[in-house]
Image 1 (cartoon, rainbow, N blue to C red):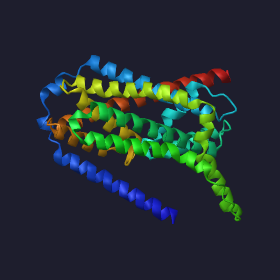
Image 2: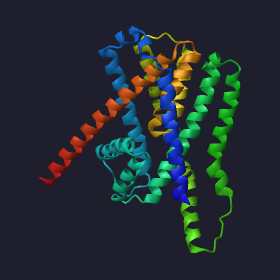
Image 3: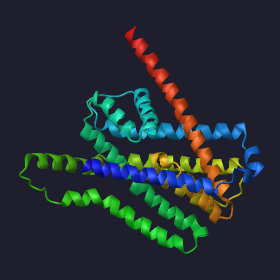
Image 4: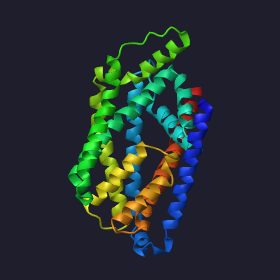
Length: 318
């Protein structure tokens, strides 16, 4: 039954991917991309955007490592974890979600159980989904004048959903433990309960404060990335319009429908740009720049940290 369900979900994702790519192809007219979009993008802009990506990636690695370390008995080197983190991202591009299996397998050697790995992964996804959704709601309310009265509906909806997501583990904690007679079902339920309640354990350790602070820093860095990409191609947009692109990009990064939301992000950016009266090509071009530098950043850091790990292992063996 599970295999059938997984196959259906996989087929739906493939259909969405091809449909999105087709719609991008239909709407995109490369010859209509103004020449100044290409001419204004220079080496200084490239270096600045790549630097922002590098800083943002290292911040993400640090947050994840710090969260995992709370469940580890042994200490783990930042360089070693960075290698695992980056390698897993490359693997996931080739085969979606397989990177998580790779990372879990190697962390198991450091005595991080698969249950704890799933719990930490769930916890980070849960925390930053409700937290960023809350930030997006207020950003749309403050800067979303372009959306007119719709911004109030988006704000209220985002606020409600964020509160509900935050409340789920705490509500579940209040639910009495179900006494199951079947040993297998009981064990499955205990694993499930342990994973769902991990946020409460982290909250007791006052770890939320760390995540709030570094989450805001990462949020600002991601905004600077969008802002820099837009300014680099010489498109004049209001702060309200830039915030719309930023919120859309950040939200899609958190809710993957296809691998890295390939096709979907380009389509949404293009349609958003069209609604702003800029043309489909400009929105597509902005997302293309973000994808290009994200890929360059990933490959560059993968090479660096794998070489660094290789030299460290060689030195230890000698």
